[in-house]
Image (cartoon, rainbow, N blue to C red):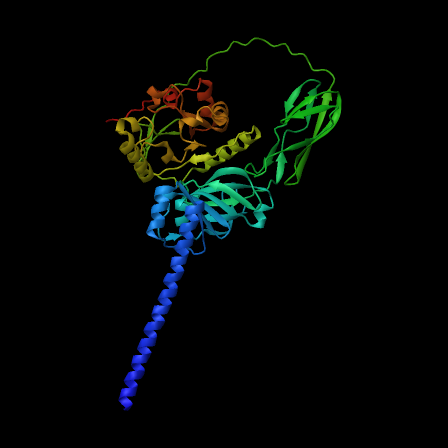
Length: 464
């Protein structure tokens, strides 16, 4: 009888365990079913879904509905919103958005505090991100958004973005690995020294906020309106006398005072007609090759004739490029022009994948007119970049016009000028800048905007 009771107890325990397992499985599957039902109804009704888990698996009918019936789906996770193309909506999505406080101390960044966003699964799929900012950022009212590639290639993607009730929204540029959001405080104002002008004479103050990549770049001017007038940083004498102009950055609470003396009469200058002479192009220097890289006049040459070794990799856009770009970017801001790097450094493998994709889409002959073969791309030098956009829609913009008229002042040239296809081997690209230094850039500009090939008498032709 005792043995029989023991068997009964074991049977009962096994039976209870089985019931418990079934009960737990029912709860788990029930929760998943309810979650999936909520997701399905939400997407079908609003095209968006609020998720509370970092990873979620959805019904097949939910996936089918998203892929077949809507173009974009909005994912809401915690206080952040991500908008993605419906084709990227898949099972097992990792919705964790890695954000944390980080201090960046590279190039023009003086240990600035940022909200750093590490790229992961959700950013790879997301096209647009709305993110809640911490107080140390939203209190400023505006922020800059930077992209990070190869850990040290930092590019301003969106300057002076307005904060709306602690939130900002920006498009994800998938050319970059990470992103960070920051506010760079202006520390000082530099400008012309004391001015001496005559009544009716105008002079530029050349006032700038330092550092040049400061987030807030608007300057205000306080002055005696009876003696001078100031418009867009240009001072005009109205009445003889001495006064002071105070240049101020209200948000960063910095200012500078400039003494201005206005004389009664402006000296009359007899202008002599000067005979304009065509700039003389210097005799072609000799080409030299160092470690498989071609140089002329100290300038690295890369085109269809002169390739780079596949192993050449400066690690990103060079410091000289970035320093010149930040200087140009700051000057453009004063003219109401926003410039940023849309596509910078590309290594050999990246260019190989890009070129092959174009060949597959348009054929080799067509691809060769607008895309460089691997090893023949200036992007591999770290001295070239596409500004703001990389398509013909950029041609007629105010930004393109500004670059065409001013980029040489900072050491850049429009690498593939309009009407120079026979020399460069590429169609006109108003957005593609190459850094060659201020001296060479000015000479090329003064020569009528000719191509680099024309200036040095070079060819640009593939051997096959």
